[in-house]
Length: 343
Image 1: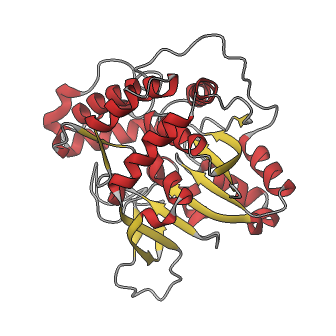
Image 2: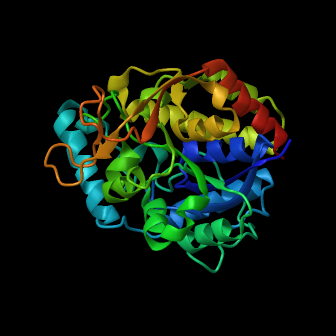
Image 3: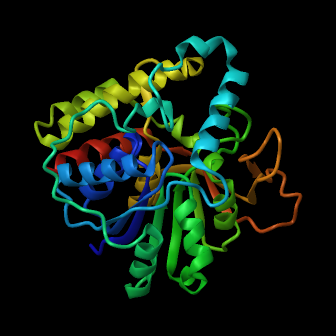
């Protein structure tokens, strides 16, 4: 079976880690490049994390290119401070539960962005001598077939690619993104972390005309990974299974403590892997709806919010397929099988 050509754009992140394991271990994707973006942590840390994961699972041959530290318009520091303020306002009684360490991204991922496992220090992999956007453009330009983009962090690199290389947009088959939210409320209405970090880039992507499938909080907080799945990975007996289990155990504890109001205990979302799984096997999606989506970039209360035209009253193109549910058991088995296929 011919593999699907893809570029993965990520900000590892525990769920990014699992998404990379799934993408490589599925043996269904032709991963032409992995690019990094700041989001869950600084660009230096997310890039280091991507290199460590790829090397550890045996995917050393995949080129990795580094993106920018800041979103298109805003600064990463500014966005993180605003996010922290939003959480304090919405959940003032949880202030004592904030981690004492200095966190430079999403706190559920720890100081490095991938806490919970110690990678070997002898990783020979190096980033490519070109930027993330240049790497994406190179892959698209040289490809004889259209390429699917799988962004799993803020859409900074994708937005810049579309603006800098409009002639290459037609070479993009589809964007399968983890981001956005239609109905699920986490820190404030309609706000999801990735789209909040770089709403200007999100707007560029939504207005690009490229087919988009959005795996946002609406689906990722329904398709949950439990301790039994993590134990299956641990019992695989290979390096990748042990690594994935260790990291997911950390993430489950940290995520559920930081977001205790969600009431999760022995389960945790694996957000980014959903966007990869949907490319590998679209039949995993059991409920979705095509809607017109936009993003607020100048609001006081809804800045960074993904706005969905549920009533179809704007007479604007239905530019995004919003996913609401997936086959959880098949998805989780796919994760375990992929980990088994890695080293």
